[in-house]
Length: 360
Image (cartoon, rainbow, N blue to C red):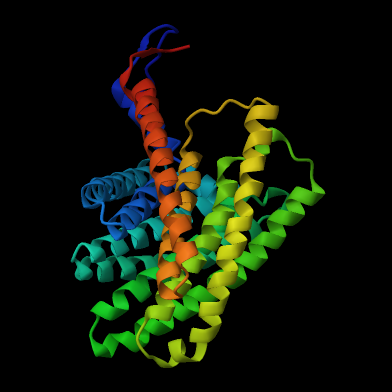
């Protein structure tokens, strides 16, 4: 069968536009699920139930849609997905599937569906174990090209977020589980939290070496660097949830360490805020890189929401009212940023998928 030849200036069909979008779908798009889900959690904690419910719908629908599109991509555009696994700049985006699954599970548990939380946690743990070994090998260790550190970037911190999301989901499910499951959930929570901290240290070293060894162009400081703050904030949230867990051998052995460390991590996440804002100013104001919608922007919205929720939880768990106040105030910054980015995404989808286009 010969391929159809389309003359320049001919219209591009809607099916062709959708196929192109699926083929080029970024692995990190589950950050939309993460962002909407964690802000929904924060709003629910603050009693803004109607807006929290609306964002829960966005969270659930985005998770289902992106999952289906990813499966279609795996079937129809397997080579493109394989290339993403080999690309250190994109491969770590696959960890957003784990974090998105856990965030959705935690929010559904708050809505009274602990069974859904348990199922999604099981999926996330399986994906965490598999991707936790596959992605670093395919994208970093298995590459012939050296030095690998030149490709380190902010997306690598999503590996940390995935680990800590497993800890958060496990700790969130523990009070709702039967006595026979609580010790196992405590074990998973503490192990995932500990692994996440070690990974943060390792990724931080790699990314710092990249920034100090190679030239930094304005185009290189992409939104995903905000995940460095989000990874620290979710470590705080995971720690706060572990501190609240009932007595179990793993929790009893680490409760004091976890509680104290969470305060330190919150402080460091707070310190990172001005650094990241300054980087954004340098990129967009000084060097005039246009600020337009891109999927990576969800990697900014999630850290904003996570920092807010982490502050609220830590303030309650460790009786730190100033931390809780900062979290509540910053939550509305996250809501405003979410709405702006969501509007940009809808316009982007209209412009690329719905509005008629012609071939070059």
